[in-house]
Length: 575
Image (cartoon, rainbow, N blue to C red; front, side, top):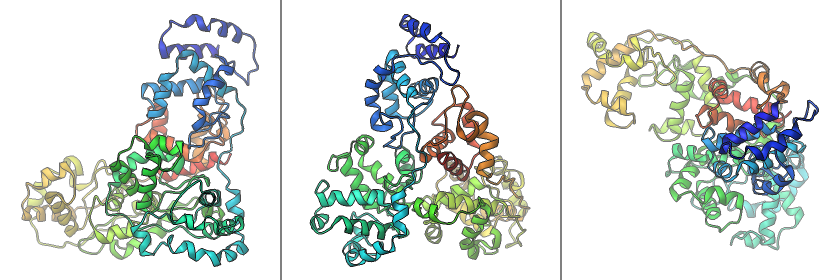
């Protein structure tokens, strides 16, 4: 029987010394039960007491998820136990969940999972944001806000020099669900700020509503990127924030603020205030209290560089078909003046983007965003692209056919060919890479660009240990000969599979295990219908990044683009 497997799982956590404890539970569960509801092992009543320590994240109802944690009400007990075991043994990487799982003895785990498995709380899925949706159309409210909004814009201006120097948040695009209670907290005095205290007795509830309407209707703009912090390490550290604030800082919950494109100084100050208890929020303080100033600065550097995307405006806009290639062509239009039509550059010193793998284009573009590659023009152009924008443009270029380039110099091609043997292990024979997702092809690339890039690796302007060791041994003339040789070779188009339509992906891949529309009936496989969108995205990324180790899911997630992951998550969240 299925419930015996629950006992085996529980005993696997601490050994078999407590086997007699379960004998009564096993006997009771031997009674015939309806097929739709599997018998539970443990005492759900006792589990309710234990669940109080889980309520901060999952809620006592299993569907509050106030910190971005997943809905767990009504999930199979076997799946809940397997998940806890995965956190304990490291198959899933989450510091807080590891501590929780290690603190529960066998009976505790049986009881608390029995409690959550017994719940029938409805999952809400994608948060609707009805208040902000209705407020967007309230032109009268926006009009009536005009006489007081100047008092806000004097500080909360996207272009005002004051905001660039001070820790002041951007308000444009902020949903009413977050804006109204936050502003009321300043008016009531429960949240204190010297400047905001001036408005304590001056704003009525109607004023606050009107201001919420004004700011919600505005398109969010990105702040100026900071000159300090390490956004690459910040992105890694920000994984702990993704459950609430979204994978790239764009929250999918209108009750939780966007961090993408937010003021760097404000993000740093707010994070430190939560960590140090200046601002009171257990949900915020818990994940921040272990972070150093340096890590907070890095996280702020990452989020402030992301492109804000108002979920509200995106949902209100007319729906369009899933067509990343067409979207990518529009985004790539801003690159054509340098990289040439369709990515076939004709300018000396500018690389062609055809013949490159999607993943390589994405990583190279993000390196410019994060300052790992130095080029002022490139950094300015790509600074406002989101991760999905970059991915769409990358797909467009990967699908274009490379065109041959005219020879640019009279360098010694024979010498270049001899020198190329040292490059072949990584960049492939004749400069056509065998692993283009990691190592780019050099065949047919612009000669001047290859010279400049090679010199950049040699002098440390581009950081890559393997490239530095090889290039430092080359003379200037050898670099020129090598570049001329590779440039003269024929470029090949990389085999590229376009992102699949999300509905088709769900039907052909996900439904096999997770059931039609995400209503799983397979033992040990969780239901996805109605799950939080940001949580599904985060979980899939963790499988891709090796932070979760289920072999089937790692294989399934590994071939998906971020575009596909987000589309799948949106589909399930709306069920």
